[in-house]
Image 1 (cartoon, rainbow, N blue to C red):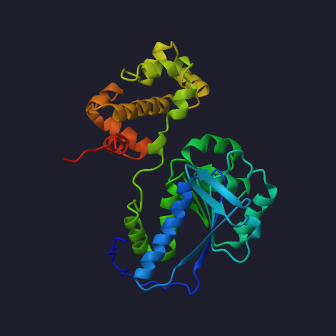
Image 2: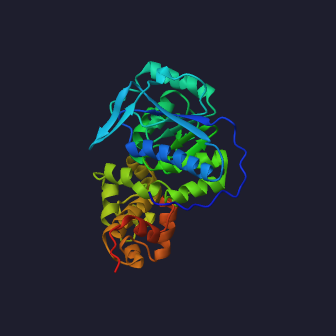
Image 3: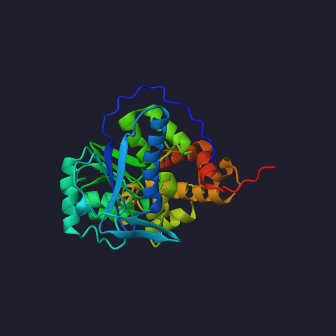
Length: 344
């Protein structure tokens, strides 16, 4: 095995005598990467603590809704040896993975009631990906901010309108409840939990060892944008169609109102009613969405793309990207163009 040379921790730690008990509750539809991400972060934490002469800070175990194989794909299988209702003793941190494909766990009253009871007795409760649906079903997120996988955000809002969903966030903390977006966001959140418990230096060492960001730049919006729903749902509306077909042209609201033979006030009112968002906001969303495709698929300069999307200068496009995605066009291109690079 290669010899790993890692620095010892410089910040003294006052660890509890007994490791914190972490229980991961997994489901048959849970991503293996989420599961392994949590396990690996806690394992790396133990490694760095041992290298510096400390005892482990975490004791991790896994339960599920039923025993046996809960994940199997391409030769990889994950087996749960205990069911959730067999769990005994106190728990420090309860981690809930994604809901299953057919919502079986959400309709399992015994399971949801168990989540409610556990939430009252643990120091911290955590969800990854659509595990937030389970917390919401148990009523634990009512009136609180939370996040989930961006692709499930619309469904989440429809089911749980009482929750203050922020799907652009990678992970959200509200009191002792943490929610994370999908898949690799579980690793981001696990590192944040280590920082909360054991300090920034150890969390930084873990992130560096796993070759991930301690604090990922940007937010979840960079993966899906904010315009997807608006652009796809209103393609048959005359207002929306005209805007999408003339994005590089003059789309000032006065110009649009004149084109449709309406007063500015009537145009604004009708647009909001038919499309569901203010016209200025919709125009910006469409332009950002178009620019994203150009950045992903072309080698055009950012100034050229700005002009093709209706901005007089690249500054306008940059401001729109910052507002909608939390990153610049250049950063977006660097992150979402080809990863295939050849070194001479």
